[in-house]
Image (tube, rainbow, N blue to C red; front, top):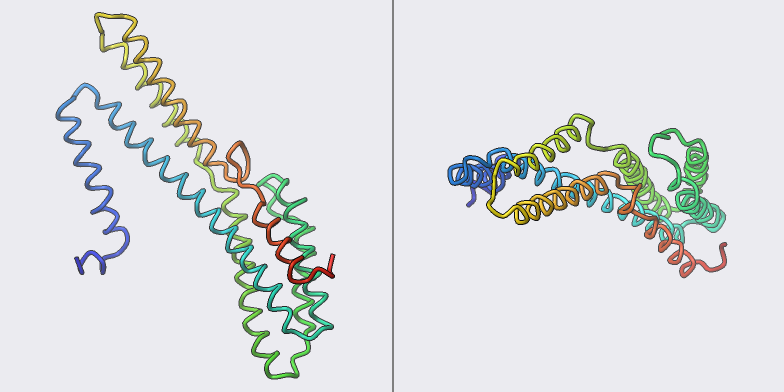
Length: 247
């Protein structure tokens, strides 16, 4: 057990996921040799579902990290000098408003967004102008800048995740594999034609649903399962509770 815990992640994953999957697949192939295409396709499709679901969860976690850093920065500004506190909090509000009402509606292909660059530059300038004569403020300022860097990292990770999608070759493999799998149903002749038609229709419907699920999860910020800026809207409510005087 200690060997497993000390092993690299890829070895641990192979022992717990890949090897058992291969063994189960080999058993199934030995039992039902004629369904080799269906088994291989089901394994590939299963890995694709896990892949897109993992990326979807990572995108949500990245957004939560970004919002958490915004919340921390807004709260920490309360311990900075008053002449810097108000401009910093105003810049943070401007950034959140831009993300909700402008940036979230932009296509993922627009990587260069002048509006956001201007807002972020202004935010950095507000922190640059903080008076650091007091020792306590200086210590607090160092921690705040570290959180500001984490905010920038989370923002970049969110933008990168919006551009990550399955490639055309992978989609070709999934679609062609689905058609071949359904086509093989016609080689298993049943005495009852209605039963065979029903089984084929159920298989086609099930594969269509899985492919639709993969497609929706693959598009994190667009489509029916797109992540909405709910967390950013909630952090604005938190801002109001901490500083209701700033609009």
